[in-house]
Length: 310
Image (cartoon, rainbow, N blue to C red; front, side, top):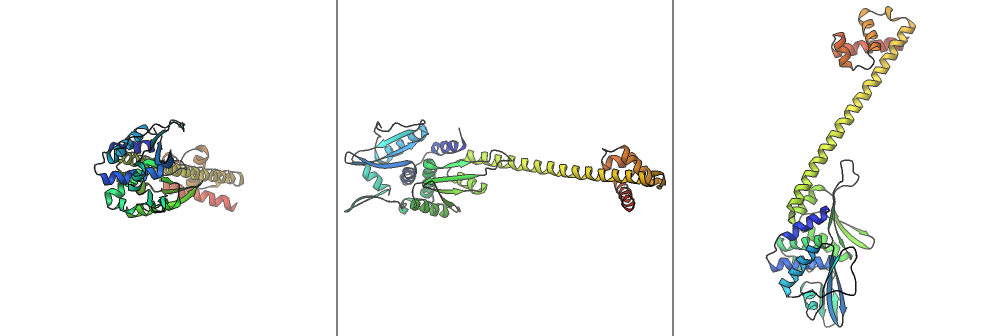
C-alpha cells in the first residue's frame, strides 16, 4: 500500500457528521474523480476509484444525503482493478445541481466549472472540500532516501483550469501557498515543502500519515548529518594524506641534497620519524616523539621550508 492510499484510508475512517460537510466533500470528489453524462434522456454521474473502500464510502454518502443507490455499469468494463459507481435516475440531475456542479435554467443544463462558494463557507466545509479533492485525485510523494532526487510533493489533479484556480483560492483561505501547473492537458495544484504537506495532512485528519512524515523527516535529517560528517572526515583525511606526502617529499629532498645529518637534532628526529611512519596521523606521530601536535606541526613546516630553499 503506497502512502497516498494510506492517507485516503485514514480520511474515510473518520465519520462525517454534518450534511453540509458531506455535500462539500461529495462535490469535490465528483469534480476530481467523476464523469457527468446523459443516457436515455437522464443525466447521471459516475465516480471511479481504485480504492474499493473509498467507493463504498461515497455510495454511503450519496445514500445518506439523497437516498440514491447506484446502478450496475455494463458498457465500460474497468481496467486495473478500478471500481466504477454509477448513479443514473430521474433525480441525479438535481443532485448535481444541489452540489453546485451543474446549473439548470431556461436555457437548459450546463456544467458549472466554478466552485459553488456557498458550499465551502466556514472552516469545516472548506476542510471537507479539500478532503474530497484529495480522495478524488490527490497523491503524496515522499523522498525514497537521503540521497534521493525526489523530494516532498503533494498534488491535486483537475481537468479544467477554472476549477483548479478556485481550488487554489480555497487552499489559500486555509493558509496554504499552492502552485498551479498544466500537465498533459490536466491542471495540477501542488505543494512542495514538507511543512505545508504535513499541515495539510493534519488538516484533513491523516494524523498517522503526519507522524510517518515527521519520522521520515527526522531520519532523513539524521542521514544527511551523518553523510556530512563522513564527508568532513574524508576531506580531513585527504588533507592529512596530502600534507604527509608533501612532508615526506621534503625530507627526501633534504636527504638527497645535504643529508639529514646536517639538520639540528630537533628537526632530524622529526624527519626520520616522518619517513619511517608514513601512514601515521599528526597526533600519532606526535605521541611517538613525545611532542605536542603544535610543536610537531611547526617542525614539519620548517622541514618543508628548508626543502623549498634547496
